[in-house]
Image 1 (cartoon, rainbow, N blue to C red):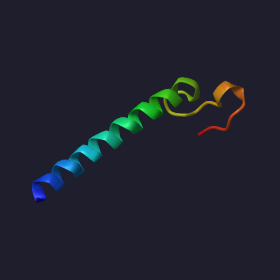
Image 2: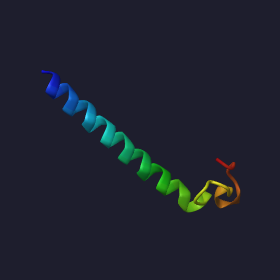
Image 3: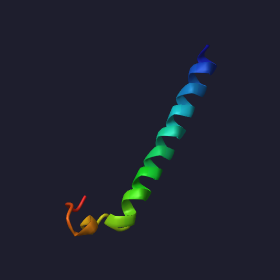
Image 4: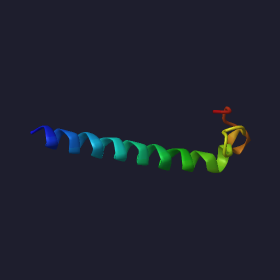
Length: 46
């Protein structure tokens, strides 16, 4: 039982880190690598 819980926890950790990387990569396209720019000249600096 504990092995199943460990596998599920590890899977969740990997999935959440992958999701975070994808979402920040999409934002970095407009906001810059370090989020120093206003996206499309309108939105706030993140």
